[in-house]
Image (cartoon, rainbow, N blue to C red):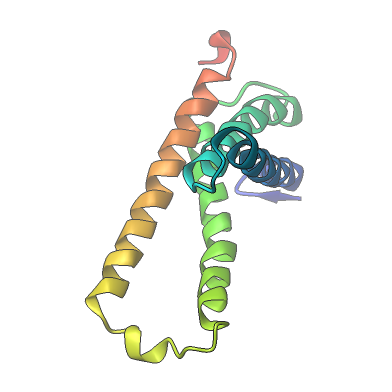
Length: 140
């Protein structure tokens, strides 16, 4: 089975890299930094996703991924993460017992939405760039 001309196994491997990066980042937070920060697990996740996507993607596709394929894969993966993460974030925010309805029309919610979308776009581009670094030179 494929999604967007990429095998599902590739997305599963990238998700495993995401989770591994999160756990590794939490460990680095606790052991090296001594406090929780968002960027360490995020950075390690994106780095591991890119390595797995470039190397495992080449193995599964039978050739190194082209620049266009790397960009599409990164975009599809980000869309998949957003489809799972954003509703989960809303659910977690709503689970504290407060109603979200009064705040849904506020300017802060719109600003937060724009920041989250910009973040997903930036991470998509970063992952694509890192995938390019981990692709063998002959395929670039």
